Image 1 (cartoon, helix red, strand yellow):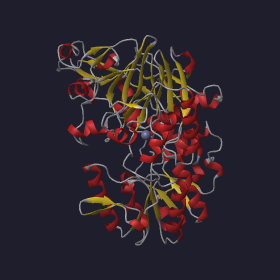
Image 2 (tube, helix red, strand yellow):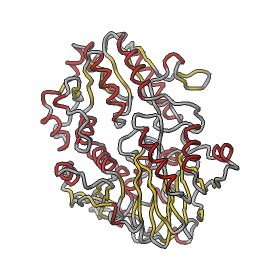
Image 3 (cartoon, rainbow, N blue to C red):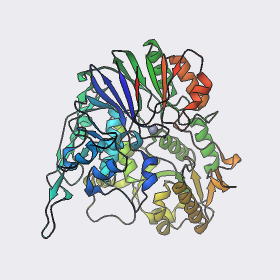
Image 4 (cartoon, rainbow, N blue to C red):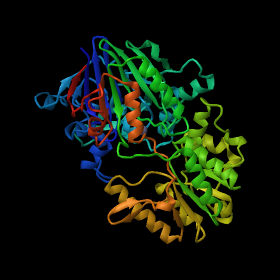
Length: 528
Ligand SMILES: [Zn+2]
């Protein structure tokens, strides 16, 4: 008997944590950060105490109470006593690995809490993006997916024992096993084992997925980040397919198409399928984004700011093409340059920064006196590519700046000319906090007399992009009709919807078609 237990991703978008148990072993399908659960209790200035280790997330229901799977350095001796008698506690040992589908934190973020000897299975691109994001990120405690600094309990002078601090012994790398290890260059392997923070890294060379106790299939799919995959797991009840996040309308839609065919051939027992955009009836394709952006930017006078996620490398390449076509230069942030450089280790068709005339790197105005190693390396390697606020200010017609809301602080240094363009190429606000950010964004645009394009605005309490300015964002998720096609063509015996606020969509639209649709419950188990 195979058991699937859903510790996250139930009636929420993201936070997927699905435990698969079989005689052959135990696997987690993703181990994501549950943004909506965090928002129930926390905000920017009220966060779980990093120094409290596992206590806060366990008490607040952000992490499943599974004794035995978490990092020992985050546990106090008495930590589990209080949970053993309480509900939802379980001792769980001998996890064979995490099957990670892609490097978005709502799928990967909580890996940071797990024991370092539990291997993470992924594509090489997912592993590398996760490391590049972590290397160049803010080192937030709960984003330590690839490596972490073990904590030690210390007794400060005059304090009682019980406070936790980051240890000084260096970083500890997780064991990653990648599906496409054989083609990796030496340079790529070196990147993986290299410590790029100030601390030393106890590295773990990349392993191969063939060492897993399960027979696994890694199926590439298209999503809004490179390297995304679905997983096939051969269990004693038959094949289980886990979709991760996917779409058919993106530039790599053919990946998803061939995954559907190959998964169908396995005649799967169960398909665990995402349902983020079940409500949408159509998609915007990436080519359409290119056309809409080109149209908006061709007529622009003054500076152009493009707001999109640079981790969506396809989108970055779309705007690079627009920059070439409009004779502007695309100015990206150092962390985006680092990600592009990292991706090029795996995909030689990604443009080389040094050889691409239309790409430059924007150096933030208030830099640190002692930048981290990865940043120092970027500044050194691409010294002739660096532009400063004053360069942009004096040649505003020459640039498309890749900024998001959180980079607006550079505008007082740049002083964009009135009438400059702000192109929004990302998703609408999904919660109150994001709505507040959008109000602020509109205020920034007013302050500098910038012209917004494709920007959601509030109308009768709803945030919508003006009709004539749509077509600037291709979602990472398939729309409802496409999702139904995925389910019908794979034709599993059982369909389990996750990563959706409306899983009933599948019951309403696929019921009675020979697929048994089972809705998971939080913490509940489905036997297959
Ligand atoms: Zn995703």
